Length: 372
Image 1 (spheres, rainbow, N blue to C red):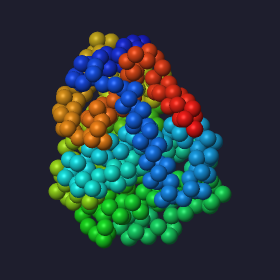
Image 2: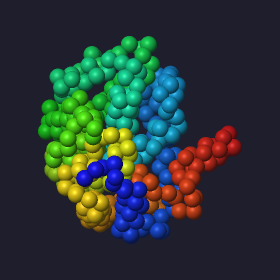
Image 3: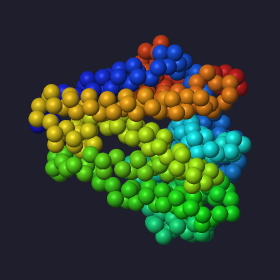
Image 4: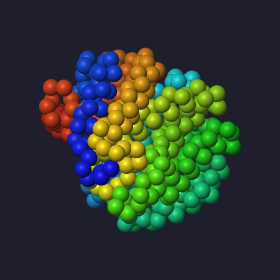
């Protein structure tokens, strides 16, 4: 069918409505309190845990460099840190990891989540700031960093402030993973992590921007267009359970795979309108182009994807519903993961009209300034 004639504006709202009906606690959650807590904690992890490990002077230079690429450190760091921590804590708990090591593992997962997003953003949008980083993450180099624990060659010119800051953070991430593994530098879990990290960078190098106007759709596009993100989240899941062993990884894997697929399917529906407008083949767009002959067919395909999302969500919300970031929270890890995905799908905070998360950040920043 002619994609230019496809009506797509209703897909996002239909998806959200189906997901909201499927998530039993949706109407009862205080989203403002949840997101405020998560961003506050994400910032606290950065300022009180990671900055001391990174070094205050280097962290300050990195913060300043982020502004050059239109990233506000006070929001661009806590947000992915918050989601990554919740995802990591859930994975660690399901793997049977020791409770006393959960915060450390989840913090590393939060850092990994921030890193993969920043790495991808600089590579795609600001290649000059990215510098020579691409040459430092070859398969052989990554094996040295992960299995041999040799970081001697993982450096860039300090004059490249943002790239140098990213390398410093990446080194910190590697060192924290080494700490979680202990002395077992060539153990099965070390190899699982090394393989997962190399898959992330292989997928990044091999990713292709398929233009609708240039390349005909193929069945492979349905999955391959989402591969980099799938590998990235799997790497974060592995990182969260490095101290839980192979058996722990096997226990955790079904949950992580379900959540990753759920997020991928939600994103591919949410992106339909933008993908067509931007002349890009996304997973759902490719499937529509291959299978649909008219609007009714396209609507059916999106309903089928939505139904799978609902089925996955039904299982996911129970798997970590009894797990909490903080014992005193009114929201579970399941609620946090749900809220981040729901907001990514365009969900707005009840009672806040269309102000959304930017308003949360403005109010939080204003409150912090007033208390100084």
